Image 1: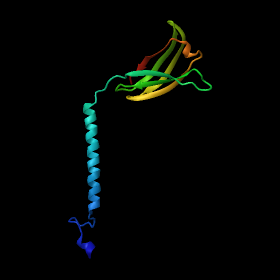
Image 2: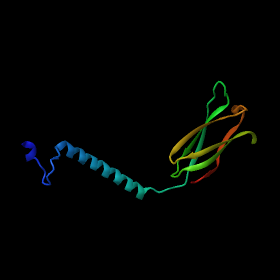
Image 3: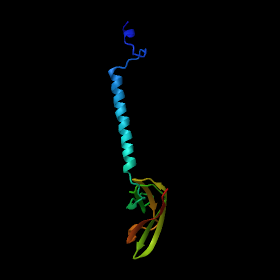
Image 4: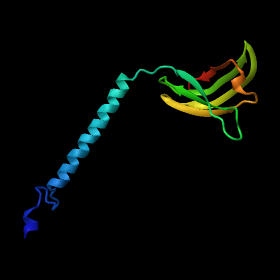
Length: 138
């Protein structure tokens, strides 16, 4: 008898309780907040070209005593593709050894780590020069 008295005006017996309404309200707030954030990002984001920064650190191992860790940071607002990085060991202005690294891509605001092994001891060089030779913007 109670079930028949709780009918909705359209004739169905499905009456929502307070928990269902609370979950609905929380879900609605979350969806609207997410949509608001995405709209804000679309209108305030200013795309910029890739800004690549290269850092090297000696990282020797037992089998690779002249290994260096090369970290490439993309501080820009766009992905960089087909990145070519050159690392040169110089002593008194003369090139001792040169290495090149190729990366397929580096997304915006990302970090990539690669290792390079030298034949010559980098400690014998005056300078270790790193530079981004080229990259492509997709």
